[in-house]
Amino acid sequence: MARILTKLMRAVQYDSYGGGAAGLKHVEVPVPTPDKDEVLLKLEATSLNPVDLRFQKGVARPFIPRKFPVIPGTDVAGEVVEVGPNVVKFKAGDKVVALLNPLIGGGLAEYAVAKESLTVPRPEEVSAAEGAGLPIAALTAHKALVDVAGLKLDGSGPREHILVTAASGGVGHYAVQLAKLGNTHVTGTCGARNIEFVKSLGADEVLDYTTPEGAALKSPSGQKYDVVVHCARGVSWSTFEPNLSDTGKVIDLTPGPSSMCTYVLKKLTFSKKQLLPLILIPKGDKELKLLVRLVKEGKLKTVFDSKHPLSKAQDAWAKSLDGHATGKIIVEI
Image (tube, rainbow, N blue to C red; front, side, top):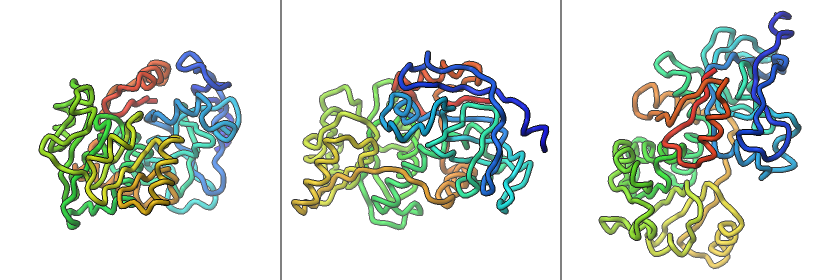
């Protein structure tokens, strides 16, 4: 055991805010040691999320990163190589998917430590890359649809009309698929090149957001939306409002100051139409277990925009910064 704890691992880190892909440095650092309630993972794949880039830009300073230098990345899949003394669910050799602590990160490396409570088994039917795509993106989509909107994934709920903006992106492509497991009519927005892709995910209607109709979010069949899973940016409440049903909800996944103001205003005026900001704070493994099971059963898929080796992590970072990824960007280790 001592041998693995004293050896070095390859990792990618940055040591200050800003810098983009050029700010990432390849280093060798000691393999981390798991705490009593943690597992040490030999990583096989990590997926990037827009929030990783925003942390580098300093949007959560001074809280995230907690200290520099930081190894970014929170969504990982790999194999357990060591467990802390209080860990009971896992043993060395287990294949898993995990969500790492966002305050610390650690995903762009050969090894990382994860809390037992945010680590789930990965069956052999689910590849490391498929599993690594899930934690933040699919959990966010699930929380919006199930916890906030009340959707029943077994299709037992009332018929609902759902709009997913940026439907071809990381969160959006999961949201379309999860929504279709319920009793829903789904409209998605995306650029022209991704229209067929979003249809292939199950969307009933697709809007090109660069057209006047798409920019106005008007359903081609005249539907009013009961729920909007808003994965894009820069759409005002005044654009959503005429397209909502009487009790329509806009669930904003990237809330800024204006959406927070709208949220408060709608609450104060007892409006039946609501804008609801969503912040993902996972507390346990139940939802991630469900998502892995849905992938295993073929009911949910991770679509890959691109895959990059750890040695080319800057390319993956630059691709993510571009903001037009179709599905998930994966770094394979």
